[in-house]
Each structure stands twice: as C-alpha cells, then as structure tokens.
Length: 466
Image (tube, rainbow, N blue to C red; front, top):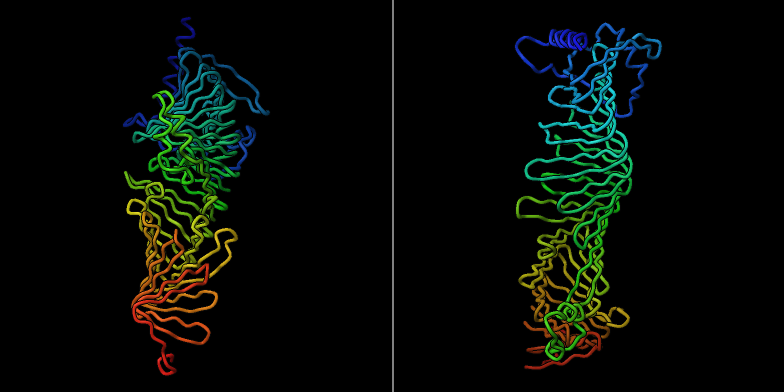
C-alpha cells in the first residue's frame, strides 16, 4: 500500500510539473480537420519522433493507479491503468469511466471501459457509452456500442441515439453513425448518419432522413435541424405528409342534435361528424423557421400542396400559423375540385381567419365541369378577391369573360361558386355570333354557356363595336 501511495504521489508531481505556473488549464490542443483520417495506433506512435511533438499536458487521475511497460506495435511504451473514479480532462472537457488505460507518458491514447461519460459543460453536451477511445493528437473521443448524446442549452433538450460517435473535442463537433435518432420535445428525426455542429447549433442528417411530429411526417434527401430555434431545412425532394380531421360537408345540419348521446360517447359522435384528410406538401426545398411565437414554413421550387379535393401549385409557397396565412409566388395555380374552378396568377395571399384570398399579376379563373374538370370558360381581370364564407369571387378592372360561344367584358364581376353564376357590371358588353350588345347588368352561367341581359339592353352599331 505504501509503495503504491508513493508511486501515486510521484506520478502526480510529474504531471503537475508540465503545467504553467499561472493557470490550471492546459493550452488549446488542435486536432485534425479531416473527418475520414485514420486513427491507427501505429501512425499516432510514429508522431513521437516528430520534432514538433505535441507536448500539451492532459490532466488525468483516479482512486487507484497501476503502471506497466508494454511493447505496442514495436514501441516500448509506458501504460497507466486508472481505476475507481478514473478521469481525463482535455481542456474543459472531462472524460470519466470505471477504468481508463492510458498509453504513453504524454497520454497519446486512452482506452475508456465501463460507464463512460464525456462532459462538455461549456457547450451543454453529455455523451454516455460503455466504452471509448481518447486520442489526444487527433483531439477526439470515439464511442461505441450504441452511445447517447444529450444536449441541454437555453432550455432545449435534445437526445441523440446511434451506433457509434466520434466527438471532436476542440470543435464541439460530433459525427454520429448508424441508425441515428434525434429526439426533442417537438418531434423525432430518423436517419443513417449525422453531424452535430454545436457551435453553429445545427444537426445535419443525410441518407433520406425523416421526421415525425404531431400528425405530420417530413422527408427529404438531407435534413438540417437548428436546435435553439427549433428550425428545420429539408433539401432535395422535400415532402410533408399531414393528417387532419375536418367537418364533413356532406353531412346534413342538425346531425348532432338528432343523435345526442351521453358524455362518454361524445368523442365517438365527434369522430363521425369529422372527415379524415391527408395533405401532401412537396417541393425542392423546405424551410421551417421559428422565432419566438412567430413561425413559418416555406416550400421553394415546384411547390405543390395536394389534397383529395384541391391542388395548390407555385414556385414558392409560404405558410404561417399552421396554414392560417399563406403566400404564394410565381406561376400560382389553385384547383378547387369540389366547386369546379381553377384560379391562377403571379401572386396569391390567403388569410384563413378572415376567409379572404387576394390574387394578382395577370389573375384568371377557369370554370370547370365538376365531374370531368374540363374547361367551360374563363375570366381575367386586374385582381381577384375570394370570400370563403360566401363562396364568392370578385374580379375588378378590365374584366374579360370567355365562354364556349361568347365573350363579355366590364369593370367588375362577382362569381357565385355554388350557383355557378357570374354577374358582370360596370358598362358590361357581350359579343355572340358577331353581334355586340351592352346592358346595365349581364348574368352568365359559364358551364351551361347561357347569358341573361337586363337594365337597358342595347345592340351596338359597327362603330361602337370597334
């Protein structure tokens, strides 16, 4: 016992002598930037002959110490086996284990066995594993056997499971490999490989990762998750699949009153009244950003929002507050299969709370047969507004309406979707079979190709036609 105690005292004095007198922290240790670089023991030991050998001291210790001489890859090396609270401190990062085998007087390698914990308090990261390898020259610790990384910072907690981890201690960067699972309070992400850049607050996942959240499933070729913001970026063939339950419009009013049930059966009654909808939102790139209470989701490049009753296309679609506010830019097209019309233009803004849509930049409405969705007529104007509750669309400025047999024009028009009826006002005119007429009001039924004129019908002469 006394001999072991003296060896430990001499050993601690030896370690302490390498530290600067004015500080207890060792200088910064620089590691390799090459993620694919081999960590073979032979290459590490060969560096001992380098004139610029790394002399950065590393603090280490434990409740027990055994020293041995070993031949490793042809080199005579001193090894130290620490037990009972064994630890290595690399700068501000602490590595602990039930047992640590340190190779070389300069601690070039450390084999950690049993209850391995890596604590990086500065970056809020803790790594847990059953075994690991510390590499001083590379500035890394490699963990195997399904390690776990727990990141806590700014009130956010993220837990990552995988098959193996390489932690770059100086860079606060972690490379995770094999069946990576990222779990937060909001969602779960699954992928094959990932890189966690903690200083940039970003996790990059490759290999077709997918994300689960409440009633949503997201997938893309690559995914980046910004932890603090809770923001997400999906690249290349980004897709969102969402399930929602909405009131079934086909059910008659008063259904709930005629089928009153006890409180225990209310949930069943509600499920009968609501219809399940699946929405698919796809495009080239998806960005979901969250700043405080404000959040939005933007799909860029060939954006498509598809449901069984409608389709929404544009170069870019931006959604805020869970689709309560939508802006679409570039080749905007909205198809309403239920009401039999399609709207298109360069810019669309929709406010769900107000039930209001605004379409501009060469806007048009195409009137469709509800069964076949074939075009029966169209309307163009300077801008078009739509009101959800009334199911009406109002077109203003240079309104032009084409049906199968006539062309009409005026200053503004109102389209009543449920009646498939258009009322054209503001000096309206109609041309059919070569004859041009004007009236105070013109009513058209585009899909039936009918027109009714009232309030001062007048046939215009040739000069007025021109």
